[in-house]
Length: 286
Image 1: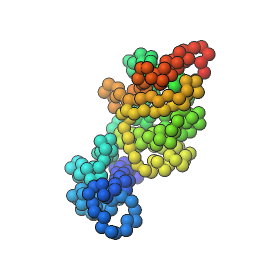
Image 2: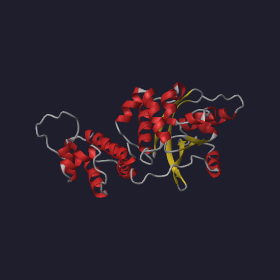
Image 3: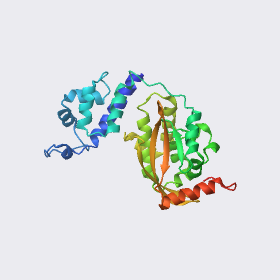
Image 4: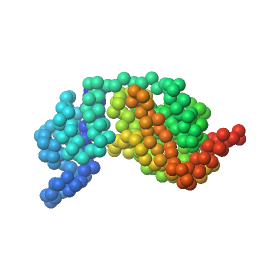
């Protein structure tokens, strides 16, 4: 399959998945009394809302349309009530076959490592669009795992969340975290849908885990902006940490991922304990 055909297929799959998630009543469509064989909008309803023909929607979902105008994509995004990150994914996937973005080398700049090491009070990682762990600081290793002991090809947050039992145990709500990881990874495909390493990672996880297969086929996307996660750490106990991601310089392929806690909270005290414990010679990484 050519890159263009693969992109068209991805676009069609995404549109169908988004259409299935829209409640007709939420977009002002009355109940016409007709039985719905599938959830969400019918194709003719999406065509009506987006002001395009039904045939055009069919061709888009079947991957038979090569060039889609930005105006049409914006109209579809409004009709489907896409979030900003979902809209960005739609636009990127529609253009991916014509203009794939170059892959980044995946190397950490010395200045970036200095930044990570300078964040002594907070766990921090450097992640790629595949969620490969490119760099980390001491507290990041103490919170999650000693990444230096993980072979580089396996040093990926999504892979570890699904295939490493000890890593799974760190998350109190593993299913929510894992689903978000899949959505982050799906968002990463918009940068370069033809990335061979990303494709190999998806195939490995799909073969190994039924949950991953199901969630990947759901075509949900998320950006790694901000939020919170609750950890069950074997030494520091349970803590809920905020996180946010920061793009590194002019490289959109790399983001610094930082976990924080408000001063005076139990989570902040847990981080302080973790920093002290990890600095001791007898510390054993989780």
